[in-house]
Image (cartoon, rainbow, N blue to C red; front, side):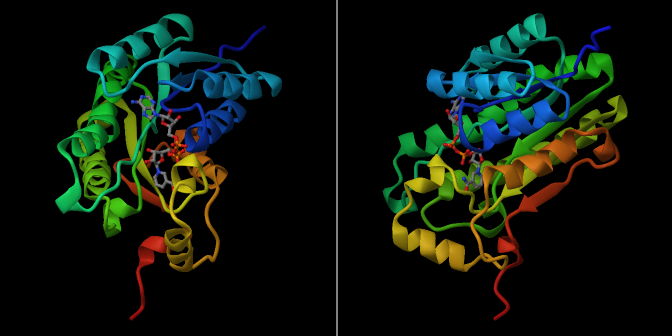
Length: 251
Ligand code: NAD
């Protein structure tokens, strides 16, 4: 008899950390809804990687910064793959600039994708989790939400906002048996960090006690754990996956 697998929805899963999470969740036994906004080819590649390993996956286009599109994403996923048991709110962008030069567009773009996007998707996913008294929300923040980073006031604000959002959510949904946690990656090798100037890459990697830049898999293993039954008693927490970066300097 075919066992029906639970379903995980990963936003921004066309590449990088989102793709690694999608693959790890598939290995944990989930069918995966692979969300993308513009990168259809990347999303297709993620789906194909999952299918090749014997998993189940489908791709769904939606801009998470749109409340309506986020609602449509959750509705369609639930119609086609089944109720969302695990949501990984991963989609995110950077528009770096020092505050005095930061345009309103750069501020709004980052806040609406990175923070409002998490609200949008989580709201619709949690509604049905509450009905079923079951579910996991895992939001991807960043170590800079804890430490700050010059040139990223918009990004740090949005990522710190995610932490407050998840802590409030964890309290709201605990009585339904739903957990909500944050993973805060440090400096991870993806397309997002590829565009950093060499000098910044060197400065950042020098600040990592474990002495290496992280991989998308390093983050995905933590997400997989938080999505698993073994993490049932953990909620409202922030888990840095940063090689010790957030420990700060000794001097
Ligand atoms: P990435 O740029 O490689 O991937 C981001 C993904 O989000 C892409 O698939 C992109 O298409 C998608 N996306 C962007 N805007 C979207 C939208 N409006 N709707 C739907 N999807 C959208 O970046 P990454 O490094 O894999 O980052 C993934 C997450 O991890 C982001 O939230 C990022 O802020 C966070 N993060 C990354 C690092 C790092 O060092 N790479 C560190 C800390 C946190």
